[in-house]
Every structure is written in C-alpha cells, then in structure tokens.
Length: 356
Image (cartoon, rainbow, N blue to C red):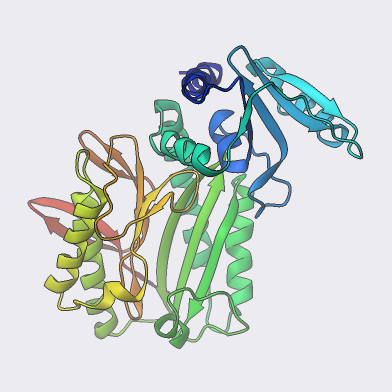
C-alpha cells in the first residue's frame, strides 16, 4: 500500500461516515486527524496546537486543502499534495473565506470520537512507519542518555533529547528529565534547574508523521545500588506481563485488571494508584488511558504504551499489537542493559539501568 492507496482507503472510510451522518462534507481541522488522513502530513506550526495551520475538506468526490496564501507555496512546493489527489482552496491570510458544503460537519465532539476509533487501528503502511519511528525514538533517547555526565543540568539533558529528535525529523512532544531525588518525588519530573549527581530518568514521546512513540530510560553514574536494581526488576516484571496480556479480543479493562494483580504479585499492591498506567497509543501519546472496566476491545494493528512504576523506578516502551503477539517497536538497543522476564515461557526483555 503506497501513500495514495492509504489515503484512498481512508477516504472510503470517511465516505461511510458522511453517509451515516447525512452530510456532504467533513472539515478536518485537528492535527491528529489531518496527519492520519494524509498519511503522515504535519499540519502544525505551533507544535502544541490541537488545530492545524490548514484544514482538509473531505466530500464523497473530493479532498480539498483549505489554506491561506502563507501555507500555499510550501504545501504545493514541498508537500506535493496535488500529487496525492488534493485540490486547493486558497484565501488571503487576512480574509479567510473557506469553501463550505450544504451540510458540513467538523472533527469535533462525537465526530472526533468516531475518527479516534478509526485512527487507533493502523494500516500496514502506518505500521511500517511506526517501526522506523520506534527505532529512531530509541536511538534519540539512548544517544541523549549516553551523553549524560555527573553535573549535567537537566535542561542540558533535555536539550540533547530535543536535538536528537529533530535530527531524526521528529519532535519530542514530551521531553522529561528527572535526576536523583526528583525521580522518587515526582511521577512527571518536568525539567528543572537541577544537576545530575548519580541517578537520571529520561523520557521521550517522539512524534513524526503524526504517530507518537513513547519510551523511558534510566541511567546511573557508577554502579547503581542493588536496591534500585531490585525495584526496577519488579517494575520490569509488571511491564513484561502487561505487554504479553495485551492481546486482540481482550478488553482494555481486562488487561487493567491483570495489571493490578501484577502489582500485587510484586508486593506493591497500591503503587498503580499513584500514576496512570498508560494504555492505547497512536496519533497521540495515549489515544486512550486505561482505567478499570474500560470496554474497548483490543485489535491487531493497535499500539500500546504501558508505563508501570514504583516510586523511584519506571518502565515504558511502545508496542504494536499483532495477531501473533506483539512487537516492541522502541526496544532498547543491543548495547543497552536488559532485564529478562519469563512470561509463560516467553522471554521478554525490558530496559535495565545504564551505568555510566
């Protein structure tokens, strides 16, 4: 499936949505939905904005880029959207007057919820892009981690993550660094003016082409204390078991019930209450945060990113769910220390602590 074939397939899905809603046009404005529909387009200028710098009007017989004179030349000259079957509706930036249809709907409210469901199951072409993104996310995060030295400011460590992401044509839309006591104090250690003494946690959510891969790595200057290794061993066991439990046909709620029991088996029955545990991923770091009783049925082609943690230790990677099991697309590199976890006879490797 090439890019045009992928867009055509998704156009067919939106034709069905239009027919079901009795509408003759759908205006896609949200960056996640635009990235999904145009097979990896990035409509963001302000990177944290939910809405793109241009919109896409989808009708049963056409797909139209609705934009202004600022974006027109780049979209035609570099994005080559004409070659993908798109027309252009261009207005002056100071007098936007986009084309409309008789009964047009937008990607807000319950319509966005429908698109959210379509986004969650990746087509083969999207899965191929995900695998490449996962590899690059691993490289970016581990490159930044290996460069760490005692005395580094967290801002400098975070800057390395951002630079490594940009060099791989992506954006670190989540970029967290916690050092030493901050790792135990805060589950989300937003970067602070603090210097690394011994222990560091680096987190990335790398976005490229709309898809997002999440991963966490832990480092220690010199040998890490056994207590820390033991704690991470527990978290790694929980993580490996919940990854294996995330199978097509099960519900997110059933997997979450398993996750709670895995914490209890590790002797940490209440730690799951202190932070969300991750869930389904895709065109957002979490398309769905798992909660008890969630009825969402897991399907092959979905992504998951679990992030179990015990105070002071955390595991996180992104997986692609398949009919055969799972692929850890952000698996730690060969040179990174691993923790082997035996889950019903299958060895699942989780990242250990890199001692620098």
